[in-house]
Each structure stands twice: as C-alpha cells, then as structure tokens.
Length: 321
Image (cartoon, rainbow, N blue to C red; front, side, top):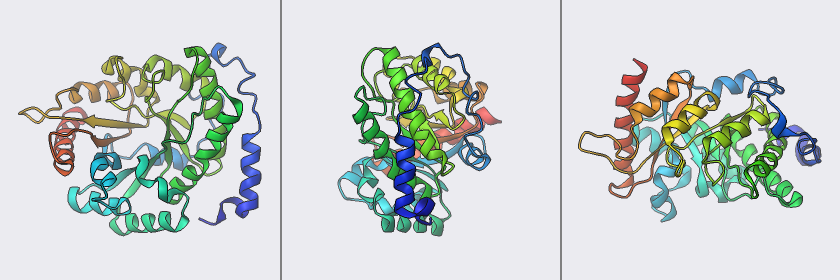
C-alpha cells in the first residue's frame, strides 16, 4: 500500500470530505423503498464483488474468534493465525478480527507482517471484524462522526491484509425507526470512505435492534448501496428465530458466521440445524463463504474447530450436491 491516496495530508483531506454531514439524515430514509442494489449500485467495484462472494459456494473459512480463549490468555500469537489455519486445519481463507488485532491495526509494520505471513502460507483474508470503535448510529452527532472515523484505520488495515470487506455493527439507541435512520447515516458515510479503496461493509446482526432480521434487512435496503451487505451470525439472533432470520437476510448476505458450541453423537451442532439453515440460505440466493466460529467450552478450541469443520463439510456436500 502506498500511503493511501497521497499520504497523510491526502488522507486527512479525504477523511474530512467523508465526514462532512451528508444528506442521509435529511432524507426520509424510512420512507424510501429502494432495494439493496438500487441507488448507489455502482459504488462497489467488480473486483470487490468477486472477492467477497467466493468462487466456491459455501467456501469454509476460519474465524479468528474461534481461538478467543487461547489468544486472550497469550497462548497463541494473533499474527500467526494464517499459519495456524493452513497447517493445523488445512483452511486457506480466514476472517480476522475481534479484540485480537486491536493493538496491531494502527501499526503498519505489524499489519505488513501479518499480510506477509498469510501470503507465505497461501491464505486469503475475507473480512476484518471491527469491535469497540463506537456506535455508527450514535444519537449524538459528534459521537457518531467519531465512531465513523474510528473505523478508518480498520478499513485501511483490511485493505493491506487483502480483505475485500470489514464487518461492522449497527449500534445505536432510541426507537427502532430512529436507530435505523441513525445507523443508515453512519453506514453511508463510512461506505463512502471505504469505497475509495474498493472495500465493502458487512453488517452483523449483533445488538438488540440488529438481532431482529426484519429490522436489519430494512436497514440495508434503506441504505441502498451495493457495497453494504449483511454478515449474519447464527448465534446472534437472540430470541428471533434463526431460520426465519436467515431466510430474510440470505439475499442480502455475502458472508455467514457459523457459531457452534457443542455437538451431538452424530457430529451435529446441538443448537442449530445447519443442514436446514444452509439450505434456507442457498435457496434464498446466498453464495458466499461460511466462517467457522467455535464458541464452546466442552472441547478445547482446536478440537472444536475440527468438529465444526467436519460438520460444515458434511452439510455443504449435502446442500451443494
């Protein structure tokens, strides 16, 4: 990467342009009926679209979150994640992020080191998850603008890592309609910046409002950009029916987080029928990648990852074939 559009001065100028108050809040977003691919359909580059929708249907990738306990305990090096994925699990694509890279995102040398390690192993990055950066739909204008700006280094780091996308959360406060309006403003403004680097935003269903798939689908349609999609987490729907949620979000999703906790005697995940869920997703038009996100405690994390991978491979064979 070469200084991002003319070095620090250019970046500051670019950031100021993006952070100027847009017309997003002035436009009655909740009254619009634009589809996801309406309006700003030209915003995402073809290369980004190809990258985020993996060539193979339901391509299995490994989420760094699967090793949360090991990483937080200092038992694993977050920069060695690509090697772990390739050599221990024979997985060639990864989802970076969570709190594990927070200390490295602002350090170009660390990110370059991680990118080099991934390249050496032949491992591709598909997404970098952003966490703890403020609410993109904060009701306070200054706080919302600061949250947007806080995401910029993560977008830049994701670009350096070869990831075509960052995953973000739809944090806000107020009534569902107010939150949708505010988050839409934050997403549009962040997407304007990300588009300068051909980067895509993936919005997770984490959070009270976003766990309601109807609300999240409505948000994405109101945003109306072809470079803003969903990345549903099967373990984050809360009380909302996950199968209904997948049906609603599948047409808008470019990635899927397969959260697993424990397995039955046949190797199936006890909380989620993944054969049913992935069938719903593919029937709804989903053609993206599926990230292993082992979050259980019954098995050591490496064994939990292997169990999740075996389950997903079996289900993928049944669904795709």
